[in-house]
Amino acid sequence: MKRQKLVLVNPVNNCRNGFSVNSSSRFPPLGLGIIASLTPDAWDIDLVDENFSPFTYRDADLVGITAFTSAATRAYEIAVEYRQRGVPVVMGGIHASMRHEEALQFVDAVVIGEAESAWPQVLADVARGELKPVYRGQWLDLAGLRAPQRDLYNGDYMFATVQTSRGCPLDCDFCSVTAFNGRRYRRRPTDEVLDEIESIPQELLLFVDDNVVGYGNEARQQTLEL
Image (cartoon, rainbow, N blue to C red; front, side, top):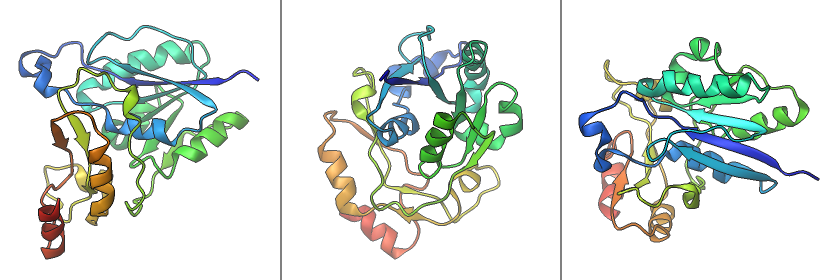
């Protein structure tokens, strides 16, 4: 039986310059790594990371793309290449979640919000040829959160990214966090975070929490424990 291939793409704005091209401003695509770890072993996975080399077309049975707003146009360019060949494209991340109607002009499906709860259904629907246009992720408890499949990341990243919590109760007007990750502050168990950190070969870690110091005495105590 032919193995299926999933291509995951981390697009980059072609016009970036200045600090944005410095190696210290690049960090691994955490969401794509988690999606890879949630994908059954029956799939071969290829992660294309434009932080290091431009995208070139490669065969796929399914494509997953993430993008910040700054790289959305580039994501759409790549998506169109696959859709023209009849390959289904699923997009997630902050931009697609906030502008899913726009994204659906270029991709077949959008995962809104956190993808962990939605991804198994996406794969099941792809297998049946019944991909839906919109999947909505749920704000799950973070105990047992899958670590990203780090062996797919380029080894030249300066930092490894770690997430100890999601969500923020502050709901600032200028911030998109609560729309994407919710107002409930959810924290991973300290021992699970430490186990993940011990498995990371890099010496430099970048914590990418929405609110890194947490909220309330319990959250602050957990931060101190780490």
